[in-house]
Length: 345
Image (cartoon, rainbow, N blue to C red; front, side):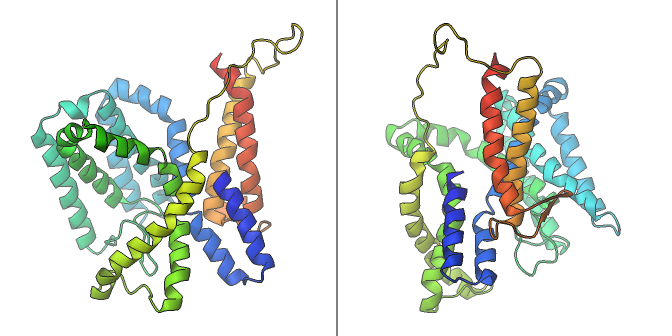
């Protein structure tokens, strides 16, 4: 919410300063793109209890079903008139990745022999190479201008293969990495970086935008991806945004770290118990609050943050303006805060 507040004020200031909307609107849409993944992540987390019950009943079969369903949705969505079926993968692909986490948490993945992990890594990478080499899927795992289709919008079968390959690779290096992280210095570094991960995630595209403003006037442009010039300029395009990201992290990471919260008194005033919703109300507040937060985050990711009245963005059939999406976030947080303690009791 702090990230969006800063950028909303900045967008208004740039507008008043005379920055053309043709520049301001795409710039402010770029910097909020990471919110797309947070909205989907919250949706997957909301479904986690139901998916955990499926895991406990059917085990690894749930992962297989989700992978097959994602592949079917991807292929069916390429047929004439069935394009909307591919949108199911906004949920199926990320549930597939999340479901692997249950297999890790209950010890199933760690108990598998190394040859099984090697088979996951090799099989996922081979499938990814075959899919992209076919020409039906682009080689980039994120959408790029000029691509006929995107592997991320909606997520494609390539992301399923990518997930299997990366999880298999992570399991192969897990034991040596755990031994390395048992040493105080590496673990301290990991904990320190981990305390600012959300800040890094939210602000990294802002740093990239600032890098463009610095480098383009100097004649450093971004060549076509994959060319020799593109590779030669990679270090520069990594170093400059990283340098510009440092002050942003130093300024905003403190908002990410939890603060000490005092004990809430059992009673308020002379013998008066604090009022709290009871019965079905906490459940309704939790549902309404979660829905508002998810709609707000995804609405901003799709429609941007400027202009606030803006033309409505289509979010799975729901039309929402940037201003309405921004209002959904604090409203959802208030509903969750109000209903949360009663729901826990």
